[in-house]
Length: 299
Image (cartoon, rainbow, N blue to C red; front, side, top):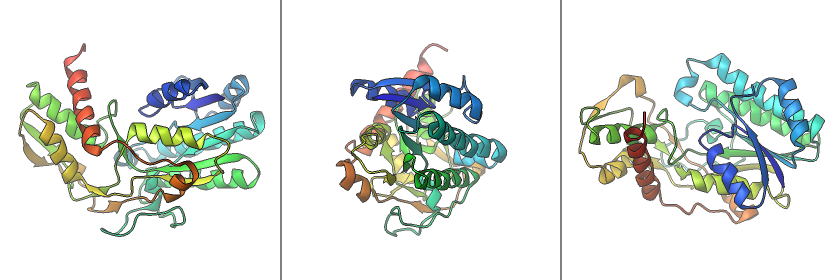
């Protein structure tokens, strides 16, 4: 299968591309060298690649940063999705389009409530989530017009290589820097009572690969573990692997509501047999090791 990946140099793209290649796919990708919201440029790239499948990963992905960059988030996340869908319809109408959205489109859930399934209403609570919800609904419109669109709603995922704009990776970086003596033994945190459904990035990559199989029906699929984990437990797991025992300092800039976001991936499991395989504790240990290597390596 010939696959075109947008956002190929990003956190997930850097792991998805080699994974698809190990499955025998011919993969072409682009990232910042092409503006994903430039409809003409995207159409030209799609025409040249002649893909049998497109994985649209390119996005502004930080919820926290989306509040200060709303116009850019809309431009990249919504107009970028529109450019990719239009290009597929015009230049690769038989290709499967994996439109990667977010579990954030469901909005916050009540603590202890069942995980969101794909029938739950979309109630996005941030500029990031609104841009992803709009792109998701646009994907549904293109699907109704006959394009082979799979809308994916992944829940939070982490692992080696993730930016420290995200909570687990931020904790890991701060711990690695404290171990190396590059900062005081202190970790700045937000609301540790917030609950998220965490996955290993490689489990998410495996889900995307399975959804590219043309035998899998198009539609909308959550990628989730079904288990909520408080950020406090994430930090405690990292501390078990750390070589320092730091103080915790609440950073008002990091504070978010103590809400819950948990998904139900039953539909994905039934369609593809997928299930998350990597324990979160192992994922966090690898994340911490990755930050140790990053901060002690060449500048």
